[in-house]
Length: 143
Image (tube, rainbow, N blue to C red; front, top):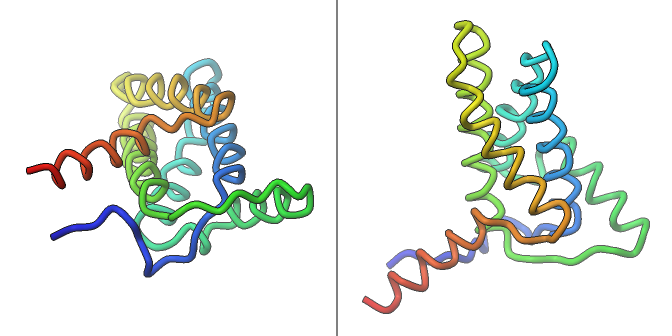
C-alpha cells in the first residue's frame, strides 16, 4: 500500500513554495516571451532536485524558506504533494530545455502549462499538481 505522506523528508513551507511558484512563472514567461529560453535549465534542475532528492537540498527553496521564516510566514506541510509537483516541474523544465537545444517549439507546451499553473499557485496558493496527487491517493484508498 502506498501513502501520500512523506515522513522520510522534513515538512516544507507552503509559503516558500508560493515564492518558488513565482520563480517558475518568471522562468516560463522568459521562455515564452524572450530569447532567453536557456533559463529553463533552472526550472529543470531545481524541479528534479526538489522532486527526486529533497526540497531541502535546493538553494532557491532554502532561500525562500529563510525569507518566509524571517517574515513569520512559515506554514509547514508534508513534503509529498509538493515533491510530486516538483517532479512535474522538473520534467517540464527538461522538455523545455531540450526543445531549446534542438530548436523545437515543443517546449512552448510545458512552458505554457507552467506559466498558467505557477501563476495560479503563486497568487492563490492552489497547487493543481498537489490537488491531483491528493485526489489520486484518496481515490486509491476507496478501491
